[in-house]
Image (tube, rainbow over all chains, first blue to last red; front, side, top):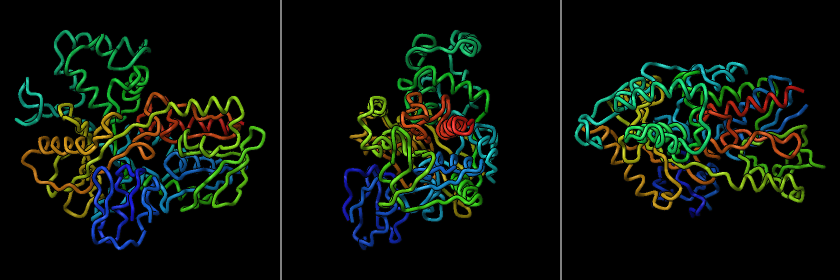
Length: 51
Length: 427
């Protein structure tokens, strides 16, 4: 998973992550337990998550 | 008659509900898997956090949004409880932060910290400005000329930071006085039971009950026009034809969907206008606590915060917005465009403010959410909104990129939708 420059840090992805694998502060970043399931990407309002 | 709506945010859903109630066939397209835009709940660790708004309606059960919700028959309850707003000031006169304790003033008593002469001036201006609203420059400039005192700037930056995510330097004086007038007219804030989602879901229910369709995970990639008239939209590679199109994605994004008609002079001028629009930015910090941090359901304005403008604790009105025995508290701070590059420091200052404001209380930071650029607090900062009409016939823009005059946040969205509906339904 790659977070691109569109990310504003709204945190929407973190709340939809089933594994509590996203930290948000200023921008989103994935923790080691991210499984690359891609669930979060659909919920990103600014297309910032590249699967 | 058929209407297509781009975006299932509050503006889009209000429009869809009103048109479906008025006999239109309505089809809504939403890019995300969820509806509600920046006005819905997102469950997180048992709390009902939000995609944007702070579970608060600026003028509660008697403002423009409540009026429109009632008009379309939305089944929601907005609760306003006293106090609707409280101002936190340092305990000792002369202190410039909350480090050495604080005391709280009712919003109605905001005049107290003014000097005697300024209190007298204020009494005069309250009457004079209602008769002849000022019209040049920013609210800050007006204050500088008429009520030059530290308290004036602190209070106006706290209030407009909370309400509009702008400083008083960025609020045009006309818009500021229109907002003040609306405070007299409509009263203070309230909390919708069930949070933001209760409202957007109720609107979606109306659309569906009237036979309308809401497509989620379906992105509109183009607006179809014919001879300066809107013809429909392109979504998922398919053409959808309609008599009118309402865009809830802001003027700038809407012009981006209009590719191919840029040759028309009016449309070129419109595109240039949209390029000048500036979104407003802000940070929301969501806190969890066992004991209440504020203890009432109104806004706590924090004019002595370094960054935080105001805070609310919605669980004092709707306990179901948090797990049993917990409270949900949310702070808002305005972020100036020049500070977006150092957002981490802005957030750090906000967190320090909360430590001072809630000194000695225990809480946990649930989530820090920031809003800017393409997912901002407001798509166009208050006072700079364009109208709801566009040079393309039967193409309208609603939402926080096309708010009505004097409307704080969602109240402005509702006023913009009301304006649009009048134009559409008068025929």
